[in-house]
Length: 311
Image (tube, rainbow, N blue to C red; front, side):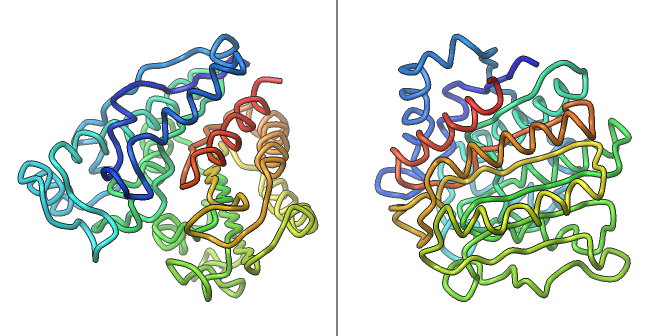
């Protein structure tokens, strides 16, 4: 299967200015290493695509979408309690992130390809609020699109970002057909403070969610001990589509987190889920870059993801 890799200035514009951890230089850091390794010659480079307002509304509340547009036009203030600034054009930049993920879903559903969107996987945004550098939740939009447009019901979402994906988890914690595996730094030590192992879903969805909190300082060996349980959890549920959020802030040295993985974790998880997608769901798999605030780390982790998807 060919890999569809999304790259373009429209994605790079999603960032919050000089000095902010989520700066607009993140995509360039990845792309520089990607091209140095010649990976751009082994993939189909795809231009970013903007989401329409109707696509945004598949997941987000109309009042929230209107608020983001207003604050984007005004070019100031915060979209949440202080992590996610508004700036001129943030609505358009966030729409390109969301739209690129939805275009990736469309291409994968058409058959014969996988997809990676490096600036994507904005897992903290809620239906009616921003959070943690995340304006529009492209993951939630992908889930809603898979259901309403493509009639896909059983969806596996795997999140290896150091931060718990609260915006996805609590949007679907009562949905028995969304299977979530979220391995993250223990919320007692890191934003957003959620994702305890005891949270396994609510109501009819009890047992369809798996939170795996890791202690600060956890390394590759700790992850590898925990991974077989996570893989079997997904395999047993026979998903029709796999979404992976491959946040690089779990790599040792990230300025915001306290885990000590190497890029081998990203390579392993991507390769195993790729095989699982081939076994369970006709190879249908979309990967989103997620977090990562050390530029060398995110470049290394995301190129490892690309390599695991094409080789």
